[in-house]
Length: 297
Image 1: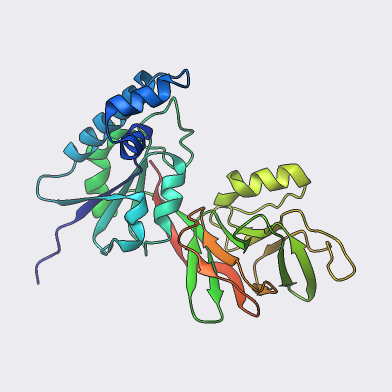
Image 2 (image 1 turned 60 degrees about the horizontal axis):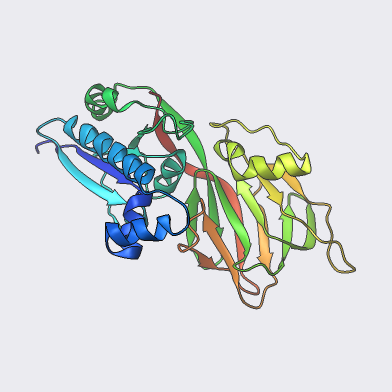
């Protein structure tokens, strides 16, 4: 049986200029909208052109006998990734996290198209390296960072995966009410929700919470462990604040909903791809059985 030809899958987000055009229909209308607010379209157009030049350069680096596909961030949940794919996330670091939950072992190259704009923690490769990196990925000839992911398993059998974190709470600004169980400890809580994060996630949302609360956890990016942080827990006669943060490595962290409506669970900031978490539903968090294979470029 002949080997399957590799496919380079480029994952992108719409530029600010593209989103403005989608909203205002024409460049002229978009320019008028910005100028009426004392802003210029020139910089936004320049960033748009810079991104698409990088995308064209990246696609030109794909070997001639390979297949190619392009998928936008909002379409990730409808795109079917194949085992032979080499995934190229072209954009900011969050795009690597966005695509990670839909993969199962495929190599991911994070490419930073604007080093003066994005930090490049996960999207660290230069566009001009793709001509070498892509064939090496298909031949398993590059080193990978096998980054731990977090898995949420609900009582109905649904599962969510995330590279950074999974959020549990209310979809609005109302308090989330739930029971949390961590090891032998448990507590009823009312809060702004909680996040369960990986070592990779410690540079994102978890960092902002831990900095604000001074509740820090040491979790390696490849360590089979996760951590949780509760956002603004509220003490009352029926709710406590003792379980504010902790590391989970053995038994899972379990949360049971006490919300009649509006409870949600979603991963890596993609709020529209949520699972309802209303009264009595139960979710267990643990390190995921699969990892993100990030090319160490």
